[in-house]
Length: 421
Image (cartoon, rainbow, N blue to C red; front, side, top):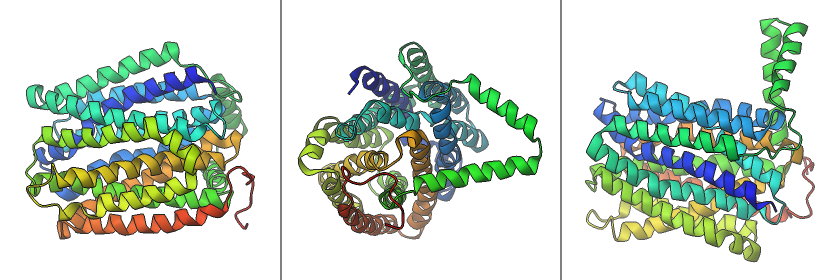
């Protein structure tokens, strides 16, 4: 396994996620200060994932054609621009614009996942995905703490500018250090050449739309080309919906029921991130070798159920005692399910289509993240316990589907297995 590309990919994703972590915990509170209702807060949170849903498959397919590096560089630069807009977002429409641009620029995660598949084999991939997942954890340790301090002392403008500067630094480092990992990449110029040939062949708008529809149908077919991939995509959607449904409601619940400050919310995010780093960065590779992906996936769903279902039952004065114990299960569950899901999707997929299928997986994840904030906010408005009941039920469904994957041996199953198997 090539280690140098993994280190650079880790650093690139880490810097991006620190910037993401700076803004995310502050978003619901800031939107509320601008006059947004809980339902509008859900919509603002969903706009990021809406753009991610639309553009992740496009970016993923581009990374298969022109390479991982140009896609990652473009997305990092766009993310930097989005945080500049965020720093000046003094109205809800400007806030929506900033989050839209940030969602469009979120392609570096799918491209980084595809790059990992380029430089790892089946035995080392789960560990490498765990390392990438550890970047999420570190980002949610450092980011919320920085965001809380900046917001308290300097205001939202400095929060956005700091995140923009961090992403621009990331862009500069990636420009000089990040190498191309996709041996099948045709280069950036091929995109213009093929676009010109296509435009010369047929400039009809209807024909163009038909080609795009056909391309999207092809992406869906490739993503669901085997039974285990299809099941993992369903798990991806169900699990993400459960977690996001709970997360949006949790920030509102902590403020309304437990009267937390912005810095305390940052501490809670940092705590979850710290556990995630320990699990994904240190324990996951060893656990995978000992127990295997299938068993860990089931265990992760069970831990997640405990971590989401019992949150509304925490006594008002026990958020930082009993609540931390429940969040421990939440952190362990998410630290297992998310990287294992992506790793197993890649292991069951066509090697030449890794970027395309990873992009589609991100798109499925983004669809859940579109619906999650909206359902979470609506359910929270009905009863503060409903989002957690819903999340618990979804994790149970995910557990059942995960158990059905045991009959598909990763080492033995060919990725071209028919869905009809």
